[in-house]
Image (tube, rainbow, N blue to C red; front, top):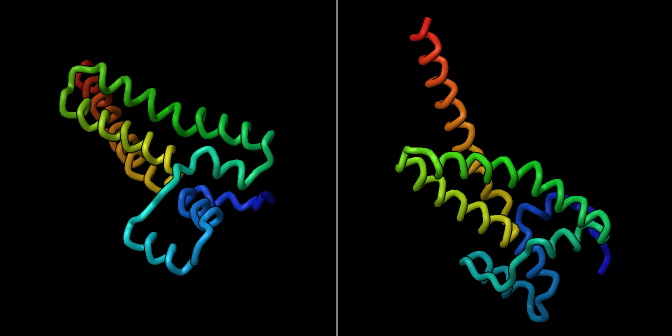
Length: 135
């Protein structure tokens, strides 16, 4: 299989692989995809379609360290904290992140990233209010 070198295929990884491996009529497959059909897990196979093996390992490490790592660290901190509502939301978002990686739907990481940014802003505001009340 030739490498495509198109990084944007990560966004809809599963559907790119389905189109690549489907032995039948592509139009039928496209109609099925449009109503939600899927038959393969795309990650990390989509990396092997985009890059050669040695670069796929590197890309996987970069995604784990710089995308998944910080999200999961923050989710762990929230879950071990005392706020039950944020802990439940964080656990659901953790499941969402795992699903997005497994299926190669990286566009679905927008929701957890927005939550992390919102939570960071909220924590910063609480920290600032506590600091200003101490002075």
